[in-house]
Length: 455
View 1: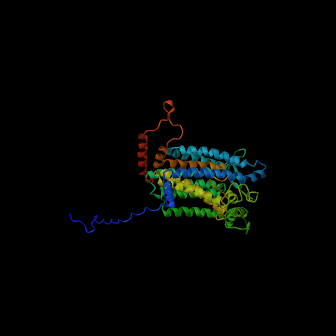
View 2: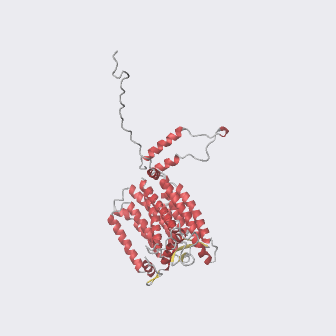
View 3: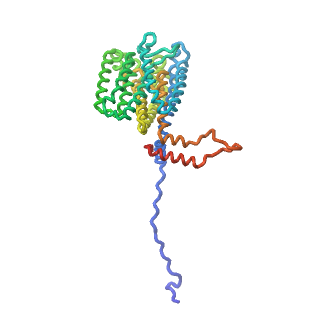
């Protein structure tokens, strides 16, 4: 046999060089955390947790600050230091019951309560003007004594009445396709709102009247009112407001205190507004410490009611005030999300009305403390001292929770939860586990619910 020239083996072939496989992208922890946060934010129960958790945190922090800010005022009145805190805690306990009841009520029952609550609020607001029944506090005739140290302010319940009744009215008109006519959009919503505003202004409480006006405009905006209708109603409301301000020296003085830096700004006495700024300025980044406020020792009027945000800034600093603002922002976002994702017109209008009410009142109160708005005399929702303001607000929060739970995807997510306690046990104490049939049913319900607009 012929042999090769080398006398040995055949030359080895060179291996073909293959292109290198692309390296997998490096795992970016920031990007991974952002994706997880976005998925968590889009979950069906996000609004439910934001409303429940945010409102409870605001209420608990408000109880702590009421106790801190009201001690000196209570001692000056020869009362126990925890006097105002105990009353606020009692109101919060009752309000918690109202919140739970409202969160468990069906939407039909909420609509059925609209007219009774409106009639009751109007009746109580009329009683305020009856001599011997109504009481004047700080120059405003808008209180009714319940005996002892307990009083009630019916105008606070007027906000809840307007939200429920207005939402039910507009929803029924939308079902009958009457909102395309401007007279059906205005009547009887605007006349009844003006009736409530008139009863409130008889007592001189312009701050509550401003909030009711904001709720009215929020309902009209959600109902799709045209711009010219907004301009007309806003023009009438602005003209009435200018007249009421110009004819009241007290309101003119409050208007002159916007941005004041000295207690005496011309003819206006801006003591409260300026000392609120002093309290915020002395708080620094983390505050002087809980209970260590200086302004609450008689320098700052209404330290535990209208100006409790200033004491919060002094004792908890910028970090505390920003935390309160973040909680209100989360509550407002959750309310808007509930109103935007529902297909029930009543739920949309009621959720939008409650969100407008709480956010507008928070903006007016905080803006007055910061010196950006005139002092309107309205409390910070869920935070300031006052049971009359706390009870209807917590009922309204219960409404939002009920609406958030009623979303199709949220209902399916709640149904898919495995109970941690109370599991069924079989013979011999063995835990009975659920079969796959139930789980598959829930999966089908959840997938069907996502098609309703919930991502």
